Structure formats: C-alpha cells, structure tokens
Image (cartoon, rainbow, N blue to C red; front, side, top):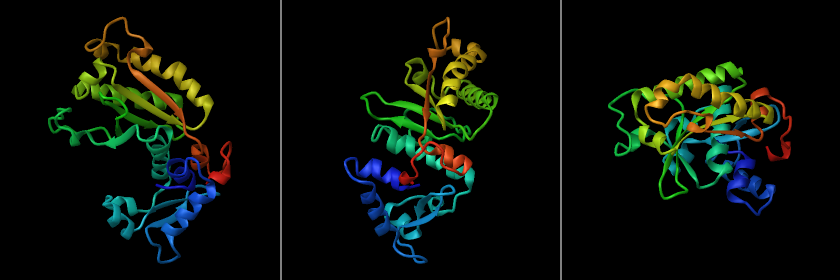
Length: 237
C-alpha cells in the first residue's frame, strides 16, 4: 500500500507534501488505463494506491498486491506499511520464517497468520511479530496475544530469540488511550497466564518485562478503521 503521507515520509524527508503527490501522479497516470499504481478509497476522505499488473511486474511483487482490499485488509496494510517503512525506516523488514531455515526449525508445522519481521538495525538480528488492533475489546486483544505466544512457546521455533530478549511482540493501535491501557495491563496479564511455559526459557520470578512487548499508535489508523479523520491531518492523505 502507498499513500502520499507514506511516500513523503520515506522518500522526501526534507521535501514537501506536493513532491509526494507529484510522484504519485506520474506513477498512477490517467484512468482507466493506470500505469504502475491504481487508486482506491482508504477512508471517507483519503485514497491509497495498490499495484497494477504492470507495476507488479516491474518490482516482482506477489499477485495479491494487485487485488482490491476490503476493510480489514486495508487496515492491516496501512498499519504494517507505517510500522515497517515509516516508524523506523530501514530498521525492519517483513519476513516469513520459512525463508530462514538456518534460524528457525519449523519441522513443517503450520505458522501463525500474523506477520513476522526481522530487526536489521543491529549486528545481531531480532525477530518480531505484529498484532493489529482493529478496535477489538481489550479482552480480545489479550486473548489474541496469549494464543499467539502460547503457540510460539509450544512449538519452540523462537526459543533462542526469547531467551536472549531478541523477540518482540509489536501491537499497533489507533489512539494513545488504548496504547496506555495495553502497556499497563496486556503485558502483565499475558506473562501471568503463560508463566509455566515461559519459566522453561526465562529466569524466575517473571515480570511484564520478561517478554519484549512494544506498543505503537499508528497516525491516521483511527480514520481508516472508523471512516472519518479524527486526530490526523487530512492533508497527509
């Protein structure tokens, strides 16, 4: 997914909003024969862009990058693009664990559906997994976190990363109030519920800091979820 805001933040750090829009206009071309990018609604006031077949061929992207996105997919794509490309540019890249058999002994097991990423800003890489808040209840977010972590602990894929604190669960949400709520309650309760399997890998007594939980507010995500801009400047659409 691309938006003028993402393009500006990643390619025009010192540039203007108009520079990003100008680049996108050249990549989009004219309807109905779009060139490399095709516009579609992001929320009530903004558009985003996905690849055309010609654009996909140019960058060797998967076929699904050309598909129109329903709301849940749009929310996920927006949050993940911000986290990977904008929040800390060049420090993370999306991966599938099967790409690295030298690091992860998957034994042919089915992987969780959540996206994984590798931290590449340091000499010793870390691995993380992304959870996205689609306006779930706090109880539902806790359940998702516990289920994911329990699966990872049971399979043992990431034991070395967990022992060395190079494993992160990154939760992406849409406003500061929810971020504070998760920071206070989610990590503590998840560690409490998983005390037994965690004690196999980590020194006791366990604490909320035993696992690296990180929480982020994604600018503009609230309007993607609810349809109307709230705290995000619509000029960055």
